[in-house]
Length: 69
Image 1 (cartoon, rainbow, N blue to C red):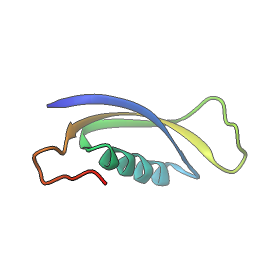
Image 2: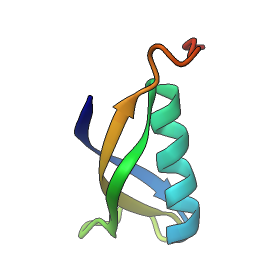
Image 3: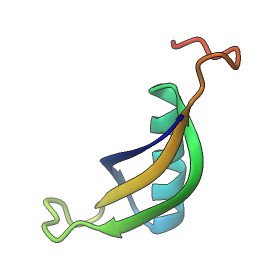
């Protein structure tokens, strides 16, 4: 089943933000299943690290040998 998840990650640039988003999704038992969007948050609390908001279509890894850490 495909569903939409929203969240935030911190990263220095968009490529790193994508890797952080994919890592967070895997840790929560999901994988990308289609379109996603990453955009910098309007309010940035730190100068050198950027908060990125994401919205992603995901599917569960349950049943694919996934075992949460």
